[in-house]
Length: 519
Image (cartoon, rainbow, N blue to C red; front, side, top):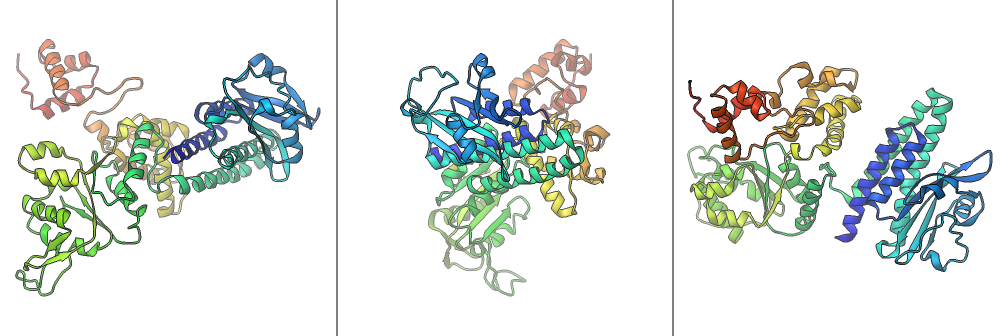
């Protein structure tokens, strides 16, 4: 798990570095952002980038993190001097396990005495056949993973930096050539990121927030087990995507994945859909039919909206979980099934159990392992990554090359998305169809045009700089009642007191069933 977590961290860091390099044309600013990102996320004590000056033939310190600024400003190396000179001259990486024990280590950066053994890693910045400079780090040996892992991660970052430097040089000379090169570099970066994602991430899930890291960790824990999983979250948060992720990364991945929407099947048909029926079981049953559980033999059954399952079907589902057997309608014979059950709900099952609408024993059987999906409004930092996935699907579907500029991403991040990822998908598809030429601008977004927007309809807009008032039960209702009483039941005045819109106040009045008094 520690090894996997390190690679997840490295993946996130490499992605952020690619964003830094692709969003800036200022070389010094971009490279400083890279070394700071490495210091903050990759557990390195110091990171620095030296570039070869073609006029002086020296390696000049271009950007550093963790070094004394006065020393860093005056340091340079001959192109064949010290360890960095050797890396530049030979064009190969070097790793020194303990810099205190290496007689050829110059320490021109005047590092202070370390509290523990320090390793030094340096890799060349190479673009095609040209070596442009050196990327180097100091790292405590206790924080080192395998030598191969550490070097490979630095080589990936060095490739991104070298591509950026090549692009930056051309940008200063011939703008038209740079545009073509930028497309090539971005494709190269994307290919690199996708290659890493394919090894250390989950297909179909996007996000690097702390909340999503917890989701990834839970998926990793439960994937190769036979435990039942209950996936909880609001509508549109991607519960079925998580279920498919668990299935297709498990040892059942070559077997069927069968999804059942319990809310969409009439209560008098759900048993026959799940368990099948025998010939002659009822009028019109002219032949035997396999149910979803038999269709999924060896694989996974995904019960979406399981909280809406009728009580009678719940008792039969309990038997499947306990005995791994089913009984078709019209027969008393039991049939063995080998399936894993994943379930999802956006309802509060605990309240349903208390209300007698959901079996307690079934609740315990399904709730062996729980994965809670956060709503999109609580992980807005993931919106750019989610948009990238959605645009990829749209580009495939429509044969286009849709892109978002930074102001559009900011506009999308401004919304609270009560419909979560599903609402974001619909919004982007509408915007893409409106944009036409491929570049989606803020004016193409529904909110900007004044078109239908769920967030605005139900009063969940989030003004810049303000957090939305939580809608979490009695405390919200109590605040609203107090404000209405103080405002003499004038909604506009109460809205100002609560820092809400009138629409938000009216929405909450209707939600809590508050009777507005006439004074």
